[in-house]
Amino acid sequence: MGTARYILRRLIFSAFLVVGVSVILFSMINAIGNPVEILLAERPGMTEEVIEAVSQYYGLHGTVVDRYFAWAWAVLRFDFGTSIIYNQPVSEMLVLYGMETLKIQLPAILIALMLAVTISTVAATRQYSRVDFGVISGAMLGHSLPGFFVGIILILVFSYWLGILPSYGAYSTRNPLMGSPALDALWHMVLPVGMLVFFNTATLTLLMRASLVEVLRQDFITAARASGLPERRVVFGHALRNAFIPVLTYLGILFGLMLGTAPVTETVFTWPGLGALYIMAIQQLDYPLIMGETMVITFMLVGATLLTDIAYVLIDPRIRLG
Amino acid sequence: MDTQVAPSPAAVPEALPTRPVRPPGLWRQGWYRFRRNKGGMLGLALVTMVVVVALLCPFIAPYAPNDQDAMLRGASRAAPSLQHLLGTDRNGYDVLSRVLYGAPTALAVGLGAMLIASVVGVLVGGIAGYAGGLVDEALMRFTEFFMVIPVFVVILAVVRLFGIVVVGTALEDVPNLNLMTIIVLLGLFEWPPIARMARAEFLRLKNAEFVEAATCIGVTRRGIILRHILPNALPSLIVLVALGIGGAILAETMVSFLGFGDPKAVSWGQLLYFNYEALKVAPWASLAPGGAIFLTVLGFNLLADGLTDAFNPRLRG
Image (cartoon, rainbow over all chains, first blue to last red):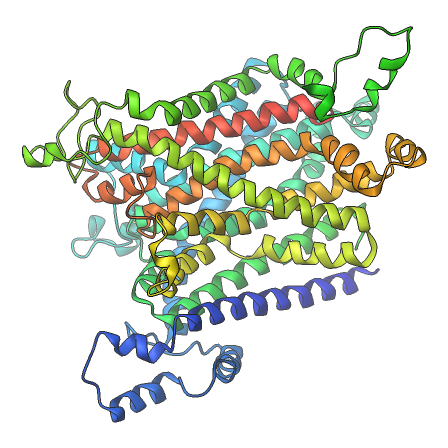
């Protein structure tokens, strides 16, 4: 099978996935009853007229199937409806809050990747040394530390005890740091990014080190060494590239994990991102927002998996497509 | 116990008079290797500690889990003292007692979720691997579907929605229904890795020589799957189960921490949920359950790591 056909097949499968998740969630939400009735349950004394108007406003006419298709058709035009609690277009809110989420997650994954490559190279080239043992133990400990627990400790140490970093929010409501809003935003990012970096670095280091140790043991490395290449070129030119392949596949999963646990991260740091918005939506049963959020998160997750799959094929010619 | 559970191919010479000493079986060999792994042994110790605490918590906890006397004395959120070794929390509960009583909840979540996940995973993966062909293709696509969906986000929504759906039905009276929902959901979403591993193992084993031999002497298909393939696939699966238990405990904690947990359950996540807002004035009430989660998850991760080394020496890095 050619690469193009493989990519096409993955694309189609991904589309099925997104649709599948949306169907499951849409039926779940509708299983609890007509959204209008739930919406109006706490507001007794509504006239038929008002109920009619509300149904019209939120597009709640017809059967579940009708409503699903209406919703899906709108989603294709990036219209996720109107949030019930905020009375704002869901798509606009998703972009707004999504930016805040990516603002901490993308730097975190990049920093973690750089750290992990450095640390694991140091460890793997000194396999079974004290340094290597220290790195493995540290990474294992870090990997087992729940992210939110790390966040709690970071807040305690840097915000409450040392008092040098803000413990919540993405911006200061007044008096930004040194009068610069950009600097202020960066200042607020330090702890959440730090927590994500901590978690990601530990996991990526474990993976990268194991992979590098495995590659360094292979024949082509011995051949490269035998042909007189300096060790530096063997490690950086030959081994690292090959060791990176399993790490790459994991990056997609890691990104999904970060996005999926964004509600936790953003609760710990009161960060105004997708995760915090999602919790609000679920608590208040704001179903257009729930649907929109889940769709965007699923879409990003599926997209990340798809991208890593494709990159995987392009990097490693040995991969059999199928 | 070893050879009964796992009639490994190495055990065949037992009938020959020239080999009176039976070679150690799969499990005993694994244990010999496991014993040498310091990390694995530390993990085993941590897990044992959690299990012991879970079994003995009524005897070792200084207070009952619902004892709110401190509240009446105006001593909620009191700092650690001799009377309350880890302080008290917002509701006047003794933090140490709540943390100890959280252990059985955590284990119930981890074991319950993984039991469901193992049954589903082994069924799906086993059938896919053994049957092959179109069945395999279909089941593996199904598995992939579950691997890509954002599990945690979906679980949050479903827990909340299900809590509303049951109102007014017979299910409403089930004690700890909310916790059970979380356990079942975690189980239903955490099986794909197990299915993939089970499929790989079934594929590998169904063509193994000892399986062929068993077929030749007329063992039924059921016998082959249950007595020959499954026991030999178990070591690889157990590693995933150990990892999954830690993961499920962590997931339940996070669900509870966000406020979607079981309000009646004594769990570490609940403790965090109630006390996180007061992190600044009463850090002990958040640090203690957080530390308990850390030690438990670390224990299961180290145990899984040790088991990987013990059963798959090829993979040792």
